[in-house]
Length: 330
Image 1 (tube, rainbow, N blue to C red):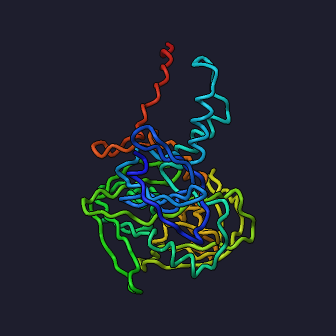
Image 2 (cartoon, rainbow, N blue to C red):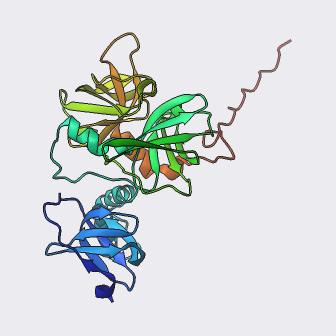
């Protein structure tokens, strides 16, 4: 049964990626490295050969940490036993990795020119009647991250996607965009393109800002002042800049209005931050939300779910109880 639904393909020189388990119809499963995840098929390296798995035969894809968490839970002594902290952490991380991409551990540093060409199609322009910002795809299904302040108070949102074909940049505008989740205080928003003709999109992987060091090279891609796919390069000035109670990455990469919501990359092509502000009275003073905050937002997106029928959701505060007035004395 498995042989009938899988075809063989030999690929050489492919980059390594995190292991995953693909559960198939008929209670079969395959474990290996996913080389390509396409709309109609999955290309998977299982060590001694490469399999091309038809998408209609796939029930579920378990990323490395998610599969580990599943195994830990399965080996627990009984339903009364509480899961270990390691299992809980693996489960949460795995759930996130099933929704967004994480770069391979063995990813090598490349030049900004190479990375900008490879990742540029995953960065978009987000437009509303009030203005514009930037954003980036976290998975091929059209889910993207931008800043809360880019879409604040707006429901009419369009996303402009750029792709390079035959050396020419092609743009396409998608106007059916839904707000999935909002974090007002973290200045993050999760959007989803729901146009019927939407293709599989180029997505960018999320990295770890905690592993950055001051002086590391970083670069941003965005649409400053509407100038789409603008690339600016700089270094990480500090990774713990406190502003109004929050910690931000400070960078010399030029950030301007329109960059808001765009990605800040390291030289491995991983998103390490989301650009969201700059000092207007100086140069080379840009700031980005650390990617750890983005992962937390995505892993707990149900808690930040947005209801289009109730634009005030999920921020609804009850009035505090009034103090009882003391009786007037005669």
